[in-house]
Structure formats: structure tokens, C-alpha cells
Length: 332
Image (cartoon, rainbow, N blue to C red; front, side):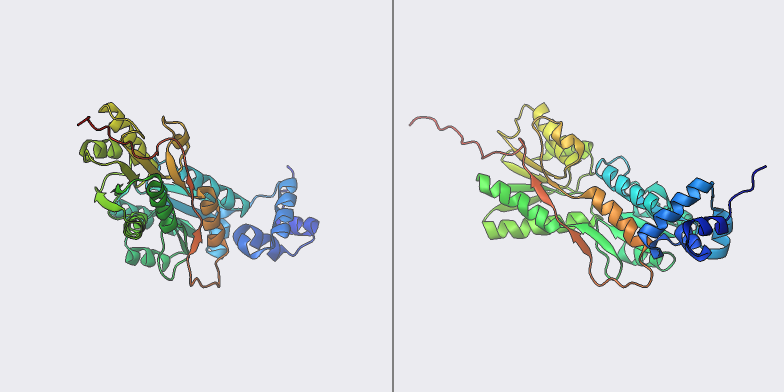
């Protein structure tokens, strides 16, 4: 039987110390990227495999990071998951994915089961309170995604700028009355977007009303279509799923988008370009956010975080928005 390669064999061939090999697999954030790549290449060549159980006993590390999302059925999280998984793999870690089902209570239960098993945790769109998140951060390193929690590493798209660009677009088309379809009450992003829409409306002379909250789903948008006041000419929806449900609901009632109602969403999910008309929406760099969250998690030892990392958003204009239709007048 061939002898199994050891950490010393890898170190000798890679030209590094055995401790460097150990850190490459247990603390990848503390090893130069080029060196770590060389070590992993040599390890693969020799057939070296780390013993995760022994490693956890000696280093108190498992090589596993967790990502919790608020709704795994929401296509917005797909790119976040892909970015996070790629970054975890590059760091020599395994990623554990869990779904909190838009429930703070369920999310807390997931964390209680997950925290003892992982080296760190990324919370994407958490519905828990800041106090609960900080409590988790006292047990394991935590990075907050799509939300800002003071004193914790946080990465979020520029929700305020995105909402502002959406309302400026509608105002530029000539709309003077806009409805905002709210998302979950526990959503930090929803609060940021609503405040920005409201403030921008006041600055631009646009009357803004808030409807909801609605579930952040296509069904939630369909419900909103049934409750939308007849005089509404333009809508900013909490996310693309709500916006798509709204468009379908308006069309099923015999209305037309954008002739009767202009609609703007958030997230730029893949379906936004597939529906008819194509959905005007605010896009965020979701894959980059996922990758940066995991990179921050695995390299955060000894660092302090005074500010959140805010990534830019951009408005993607498609066919669901247009100038308000002029109502025909009867001859005198």
C-alpha cells in the first residue's frame, strides 16, 4: 500500500514550512494567495488530504463557513450564493447554506444549530434584530450582507441611491404620483428604500404613498395589484418578484404596463429581462457582494470595522416604464 502523503511531504516539495501548509488549510486568510495556491497545487499532486476532524481538535477550526439567506427561493440570492461559494472554495473552505424562510425565529434556530459547526457566518438579508446578530457575533465571526449593523463588518448595495434613481427616472418621465409597494417589515433594505423614495419625492415635488407590506414574492405582487388604487400611474416595488407579480396582476385585470401603470423593481434578477414588458429595475452587484462577504469573513482576524462597505447600484431601464398616458378629453 502506498504511503499517504503528509504535511511534511507537501512542505518539502512546495518549499515552505510545515506551519505554512497548516495555515493554508486552516487559516487561508493568513497565507499569501500565491503561496497558498502553490501549496494546494502540490497537495493535489501528492494526493494529500487534510483531516478535518483532527484539524478542528487542534486548531478549533473546521474549514467550514456558513451562509444564511432570508429566502432561498428568491432568485436574487442565486448570484450571492455563487459569489460566496467561489470565494469559499478559493480560500480552501467549504460553504454551508441555510434558508431562514423570512422568519427571525427560524433564523435564530438555524444559527443555534449552525454556529458550533462553522468558523464564521455570513447573514444575507437577516430578519433578526441587531441585538440578536451581535449575540451571534460574540460566538463566531459574522459578516452582515445586504444590511448594516454598527460595529460589525457589513456589506450592502447603495439602497438609498438605487431608490433615488428609480424615483428620479419616473419623475423624469412626467409621473407626479408614485406608489411604493413595501416588503417585509423586518427588512432593513425596505426601510432604507422607503425613506429614500419619500425624501426624493419631497425634493422633486412627487407625491409618494406607501402600500403594504407585501410578501416579497410574485404572489405578494399579485395581491398588490388587487389593492392598487385606480389612479396610480407609477409604482416602485420592494423587489423584482413583487414587481413581476404586480405586472401580471395588472394585465390579468385588463390593464397595460406601461401604458396604464409604470413599474420599477429592485435586484435585476434574471427574470426581469424575460417578462413582457421587460422590467425596469435597480441592479446590485450580487455576486461581488457574496464574494466580498466570504473574503471579509476569512481574513478578518485582528481587524476593526468602523464603516460598512457600500457597493454601487445602477438603474436598468427596460419597457415597463414610460411617460404617463394623456387622458383623452371629450369635445365641448
